[in-house]
Length: 336
Length: 51
Image (tube, rainbow over all chains, first blue to last red; front, side):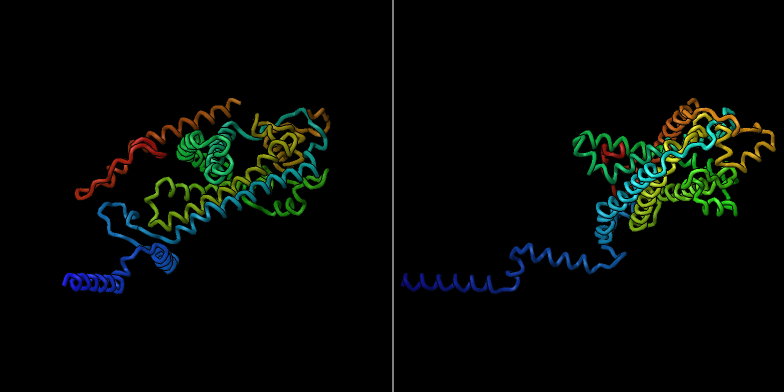
């Protein structure tokens, strides 16, 4: 009898075990992380561009209702992979071009040397506006580049703590210096727009390569030549795009949704890289690349021979107004 | 040189002024997004600055 009872118990236990393992619900309850992950991945991949999984929230921040937005992965990959490559090529490529140009062409010197006679090129307010915008731009550019390249280039040198502290202050400087930069941009537009309207004379300047490719050639130009006009419009249009996109980043609740915010961050980052590359060329030609050019923004006055060689029509206009002395090109003096 | 220094000083003063104005007219997220039915926690200090 005890033996029969024992056998019965064993049989019941075996049937119970069989039911447990054979029941579909038991199979679903078994832990299969890999299978679950695949299903989740399929779910995310099934979401198309612009799709997202949202929840219900009770706070006024509507963007917080976005739970999963697969497009965000593309955006993150762009910032981590594509942008540093594109930006690196643009900036390092420009530096390489300038270095090659300097080696091949050398510094652009005055054909007739310095006359010793000076002519006012930029008034005090114009130089103030230029340096206000330029100084803000330098800080904005360096602090912005830190976002894209700092983790790769600076973090290994500084260490995590120092890099985090520096990046924190750089971010604050970036946010608030953006405002005087935008102010400088607006003033520059107002005071220089009249001298930067493209004209027929600019085509001739471009045809002759601005006279910088061959020595002794100086196409006529008014106050700003075609190259300077190009820089002006790059600054104004690029600066406007940076300002608008930056405004949305400063106040991230202004865009309609997260997708729009991501769009503006991409615009901000791409324009920034191109902007920095263009300004490197501007800085080069205004300092190392051309003899006598820095004086225009340094003291505000340039040598009359420099003005005649690079802005001959402007000198004639100034002389006609009585704002510039006549002569020049007759008394060459040592350059440096 | 004076013009350059003046431009730097103006940029610094303008940036500080903007930060003061924005601090005055903006509210912390824990205040701005708190409603009668939901309270948002104080985020504390982070890169954005003191709460």
